[in-house]
Length: 491
Image 1: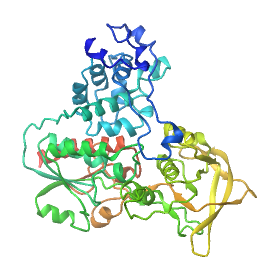
Image 2 (image 1 turned 60 degrees about the horizontal axis):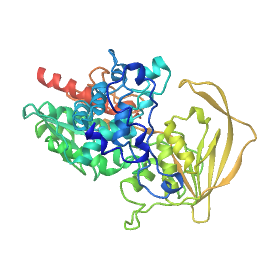
Image 3 (image 1 turned 90 degrees about the vertical axis):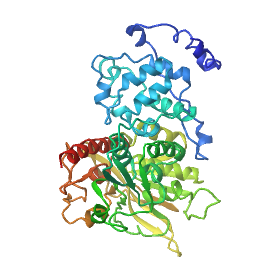
Image 4 (image 1 turned 60 degrees about the vertical axis):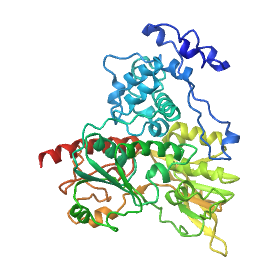
């Protein structure tokens, strides 16, 4: 264990010295406690945009890897939308071969450092873990280990680039550079295709850049992953709107043989209640994009954003948590979540809710906005809110919120962020008359192949799902790549 001893110097690692020696029986492995990542103190982290979680030390990672039982039928793999060989990468961690572990991850995952931070492992691979299913104990911390391995590789300066078996010269395009488009691009490049990613914005990364704050997913982490794709030969074209700058037909004339549409769900939903157009009322997309992508929190930039002292965020998902925690970092004295169901029904990850609570966010559950009011300059200054109670479950399985008669009251606010969902980007569907879409505006695809109604056009991610996680979008991108390869080889 000489190679590990140098990493066991601080006090928090001393308790693992013995456990890191020798082989262990599975019975002994199951007695080990799950590790947890160190976090910044809430009163410090809610004042800046540095990352909340600090990651695992090398000793912690190896200790957690020892909990993996290397199951004969690893259900964790089937629980992963991109089918990472989870036992294999974890065993490499246990052995201390972190760079090899990273290579295993990148066999199927284009964005391991991203997924290790924002993927909801608790309802996917970790939920399917033997510990969760059979032992009723905390699952192996697969997400923590994935983040550790990816960060280790990034910090080592020895980034591996997946092997390209041979280039075939066939041009294919990804429309959008979000998680679906990037996963698609990575897989197609591995198979030898000439891949170009067209991005409408001035930065590559889609929702990874504009939608997720730096305190959860630093931009530098995304940039390193994108750099690997460039080294694989993927080309990126920014400020290019397919459907406006050029049509798919135009790109076909330039030699592109097939397309993956991953243009996302960037059209914000509103509640259509009185006063929603007053100054100081944002969609979560606009609010987060101004801060995350356009540097509105940096005084060196002149990107405008209204940073109020009494901020209300409407909604209960991860994006709502991102927005309300951002408002705290922008100097709000009161940062409030207003959500019409109870905290148990909130769709946000438990970790995001916990972090928000620790950082001083107020949760006004079982409340719903009815109307906004403004001052003489048209800036929002109050809102009318109604209390709610829960009735029978609705189609989503959650109990339906019911207004309580006579419970309305007004409260002071000076900034409101509406985070009640998004709709698919309508540009691509509107520019292709033969493309079949649903009544919600999502592109209809064959679920097995991700092939749309237009020959050679595939789609995945939020433009198909209407709103989903990063890892589900990546799974769509991988599936589309596999199907497109078969399609092109058969035509």
